[in-house]
Length: 109
Length: 370
Ligand SMILES: Cc1cc2nc3c(=O)[nH]c(=O)nc-3n(C[C@H](O)[C@H](O)[C@H](O)COP(=O)(O)OP(=O)(O)OC[C@H]3O[C@@H](n4cnc5c(N)ncnc54)[C@H](O)[C@@H]3O)c2cc1C
Ligand code: FES
Image (cartoon, rainbow over all chains, first blue to last red):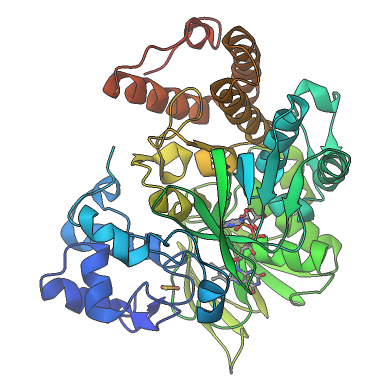
């Protein structure tokens, strides 16, 4: 396939940019995400997750079952800043504040 | 806000679970991000067979079942929150929802998460042009929005769902110019459905080479074993299968497993449809891509488990009802999916050193996988 073909439509990241990230050491979806913004668009990788996993599997020669999913963060869906702050006393959203404790953990069964 | 059972997702699995829990006297809240209930059932005009006994025997239209579910929920004590999206969780474990204006937590004793599945994209040069969409999106346009997505179409994929959508496009006056299948034969198992499309050229062992057009789909080049075929169309539908929705489960700290036949990665669960987070149950296509009857039954099993855990029904009743549901599910579900599901359950129970109930061993007349 033509290397200029877009894979992550939200962030307009193409095959070449994903492979370049892997040449530079990226091994997981999250590595590629941090290097390219692939998966950081409005759909939060709903569309590009599996196409990117397939590219990783092909590039590394690993079976697809071994290619992990991305780490998903809050908010799960697009939401206005005002909606996050309006009337949200009581309890903290666990978001980035709460999850630093889990860094490095994976949710593998 | 406070409730006994919070259900995320008001598709068929979530609604069926809600009705089950309501009947047992639990307070139930259903939150759905959409402005109407029914999820993907809203545009399924096709006939569904293999429904659980309580829907009566014989085929029913998906939209008819949807109306039944919505009417029953309307007549029940279930509290429905439309246009409420689950966007995260709180440190105390409660689910946070947003209605677009404000975000608040719902304090629940148990949750059932039933957000459904997503359609898989397929990447080829030109797939981001307007006019390329999933088969499900085209079905939403014709059946729900009453908008024609194009005049001439190419369907990529030949599974039951894509041929059903191709048939529906045809009956709306859209000419399906080609069906493109990368495998060596049509995947669809429904002979009658295949027959309704016998005038449409089918290209097996074939893929989309490129889609081009000035700002929208105009031209499609198909790579076939006999060389390149070109068609002029304004619609390309992709039917590349479905995969379970994951992110609400990740936010609830549920663990994931990979099971190809269930749609790839999904939240792991035990025979009670309980995930690794003891307060979160799973139901519907999120628990594995399957047929409609099994979608309803997983909702029912999840609800029965939650009711049992909260003390609304006795454990004897829970066991009896769940054993009935599993027996029915084992009869309805396709062999491949059932095998993957029971293997995953057996692995889960072994790993977490949980006993499997006797009824599990009896599923499929004593045939146990895993
Ligand atoms: C390349 C591509 C092009 C596409 N083009 C189009 C297009 O042109 N037009 C189009 O309409 N679609 C398009 N789509 C596809 C589209 O996103 C899906 O096919 C379909 O619209 C999803 O339907 P849904 O949101 O109703 O249900 P689902 O996403 O299956 O959800 C199931 C139910 O759970 C609810 N739910 C899920 N998560 C939550 C949550 N966190 N909180 C509360 N409730 C929740 C949902 O509201 C729903 O009722 C495209 C997709 C791709 C990949
Ligand atoms: S397609 Fe990659 S983030 Fe949406």
